[in-house]
Length: 442
Figure 1 (tube, rainbow, N blue to C red):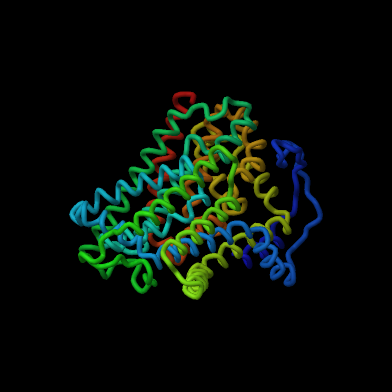
Figure 2 (figure 1 turned 135 degrees about the vertical axis):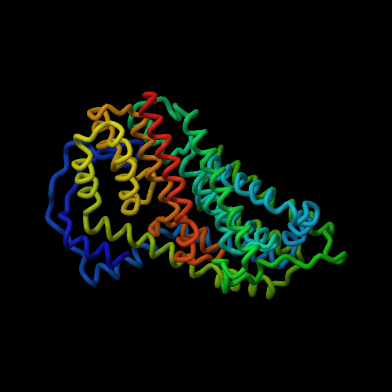
């Protein structure tokens, strides 16, 4: 990807829109695009983008480490394993499909209500449960990463895409939530069905599992036996974990907490759990280093993904791509314009992975274009949300996606093999809603 972007910087002319400050960030001014001197990326810049990318992604990289450390300490205590083992025993493996549906919607709700990177630390829980019911780590990613991505991407109250879009369009904040809520719910239903279908397939034919050969160490639940029942210490550790996570979620909603504050909460949970579990200083140190080692490959991939964004900024081609996309959309019939706008935003998402960043870069240009083409502003924002939200499932430059896949140790190539059919189905569903939106004058 980095080599591809560097190559494009020699082919695509550099250009920039003028920008003004909007809600503390820079927003494009429509009609101000102009070509500037090309800044093709040289060999030194290509490699320099890597440390710059790691620097820009430092917060996300560290929350991956903090989440890994927290689950490392919980794994040492065995409390989470015993608790989940008790849950599986009580529900029975014959209800595993119901459990998959429940968890898919639970993770999806976390994506809708809490956010994206904020939920990184919850991904390993899905890995523990998936393996316990006969699934694999790829199914764990489907239950957690796919559900959170769909919930967040199609959320009717997404503050980064819908919220920013409504501010730019001067619409009531989160207006039109009814249609978006139905789309989000059906998107999660489709994701749950897809996860169940995959679980049935690998249970019937284990050789078809995409998780073969992946490292499952520390994700295996304890064997069912009386001595592995929960004790008072386990209950205390579960209370510490649930209280800490609840404080983190409350902080996101009411105290404007974000990644750094959540990392701090994860580290505090780690220390208190280690002390209550009676781990020695040596045991704590060894567990910490082992946990960091397990999540380090994913953390490094987050840095590399952000390096792609750095190269796009250096090559100054993002605005040019946006400008050309607008030119292609002009003059299209209204239904074709809505669908094409969604497809254009999907392509732009790979070059501007930030939802709010993409909104500030493209919507000031797309909204007036939508007015000219006969699209309502709500429909234009819905087209933008679909293009951004669904393709987040396959965006290698999205640091949050790479971070969460790393937490359940699923390589990106295997993830693509698993999720591409789901992405196609979600796009078809979303485009049906987009056509309905145009038809009813949404």
